[in-house]
Amino acid sequence: MRRCCPALCISRRAAPSPSAGPAAAVSRPPPLVLLLLLLQRRPPPPAPPPHKMAAGGSGGGPGGLSASGPQPPPPPPGNGAAAAACTNGPGGAPASPPGLTYNQCGAGNPAAAAAAAAAGGPGAGGSAPALGGAGGPLQREPVYNWQATKPTVQERFAFLFNNEVLSDVHFLVGKGRGSQRIPAHRFVLAVGSAVFDAMFNGGMATTSTEIELPDVEPAAFLALLKFLYSDEVQIGPETVMTTLYTAKKYAVPALEAHCVEFLKKNLRADNAFMLLTQARLFDEPQLASLCLENIDKNTSDAINAEGFTDIDLGPAQSGILTDREVVSLFLHFTVNPKPRVEFIDRPRCCLRGKECSINRFQQVESRWGYSGTSDRIRFSVNKRIFVVGFGLYGSIHGPTDYQVNIQIIHTDSNTVLGQNDTGFSCDGSSSTFRVMFKEPVEILPNVSYTACATLKGPDSHYGTKGLRKVIHESPTTGAKTCFTFCYAAGNNNGTSVEDGQIPEIIFYT
Image 1 (cartoon, rainbow, N blue to C red):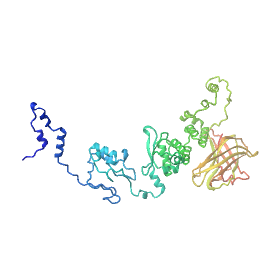
Image 2 (image 1 turned 180 degrees about the vertical axis):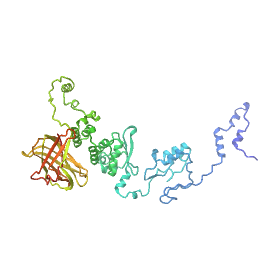
Image 3 (image 1 turned 180 degrees about the horizontal axis):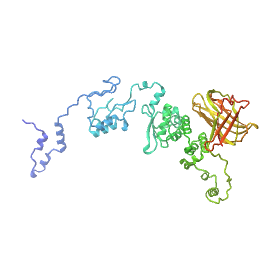
């Protein structure tokens, strides 16, 4: 007897005639019953072959993970959405960060489950078994023994810089499309910054794992973290000001010093006004003083630079002058004949021409010591000049900072005509390093003066084969300025005409 599907047999019954009445209509099964009958008679799909998935080994031993029982086959080629979701971290993050292996897809990985569902693959609706336990959480397993590849503490901490490994806080840095999400480690930040220490461990410590920093540039924040994690300094012309701001905000004075030193080395006439504004804003008096000295020596170039129009508010906008005084000054500088003003309108004494310098030594040697005694040398010139500073030798032990007091004394009256308590940084070379007076010191012809410098710092280079007379000839006018040097009696730390410190005198004619 031929077998046939009951559903098909039912469907082949004669259709009731219109005159059959209600009884014929009741005998027809509902559509849901037909569907169930069809599904019951449908042959089951063949079971997939056993599939084993391992991480770092095979079987169930250490270092390996395997799924017991049948496993779905790997996604077929071309199923890019499901494959990408399985290799990504939570929320569609990039593939496992260095040192971590994400080894679960499907139920524990919402991105993978969604992609697999869209592609019709395993993981849709939770039909695929989850590695590490059915329905278990996402497993993060460190790459075994990565620490062994980093022999020093510095290398291990440097490896954690901008790395998700062991991170316990994230910073959302910047605004808008330029913002970045940067991972970090509370312990490292608290060790390097009192501000971070208070943020994470103080009385009002935050418990949030994501902290927004809209006022900080991502590049500057990364430079700060790089320094905290590895002591490496990464600053350039484009990032130095934002990095200085960030270092000050989070109280990292060592990075502040590196930024200020970078600005000093790159100080020029065309950026002096801009750096002066920034130095005042960030409360860096030494940098501001250097900017003013540069502007004083190169006034014309500084005023013609683009940064001159961007300087901060002047007296006219600061409230120091009354409205009447502002108007009178404006008229004084713009109209002729000039109206009377209540201020002195005579030009102040200023230096014209180019800066000059002379060096009295012909050779440089090593090891000149300091014990609080001033180096001194007497000199005179054949014409009126203005001395603005000295050139001094620096350390023989590499980059070093010195504290120094410089003076020019009228020898006969022992009157101090000019002095400055300041400092300078040297790079370890045998070059001279500039130390400037606050105001130019007028030197009259054929009068004896004493140049003094009292240094506090390590042993330095010194000059030998000194010249008693040094002549400077102007390259433009040919005018000659003759310096004559003499021994300064008394405490002079050994400096003489023949050898010692104070090799250079910087002046204007």
